[in-house]
Amino acid sequence: MTHLRLTLGPYDFTGRLETETAPKTCAAILARLPFEAQMVHVRWSGEAVWAPLGDFEFGVPAENATSYPAPGQMLLYLGGISETELLLAYGPVRFASKAGQLAGTPFLTVTSGLDQLADFGRLTLWKGVQTLRMALA
Image (tube, rainbow, N blue to C red):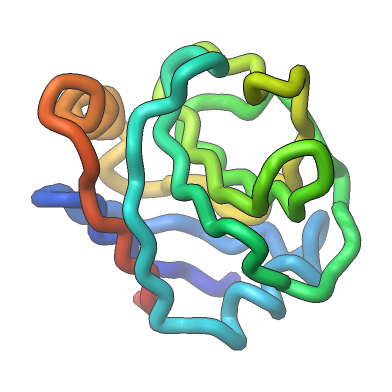
């Protein structure tokens, strides 16, 4: 199993890459490590943060895409009706944009620090943009 260290603002988490259910997406993420993006709170989806990535190309197909990630799941949305983005759920979520419901590939599950994930979500909601850094653990 491959684990990543996620630094989200002042918080540190560990996440497991879902290599069995999203092997191509996980390989694309690993090829881009270390990865950094800016996270903001979602507008339409519920309790989640997201990183808008514009027209960033990962060059992989969707794998087991979902609109309803569990708390601690990170999705990669490959673009289409909205821009490419990462979404990290910290509570109930129905992944959506102003254009409607979206579905992304769940490629990472937070395995340590999950009890602090909602605190990070509220920090982002009330204080604004936070930096995401992903690297091998």
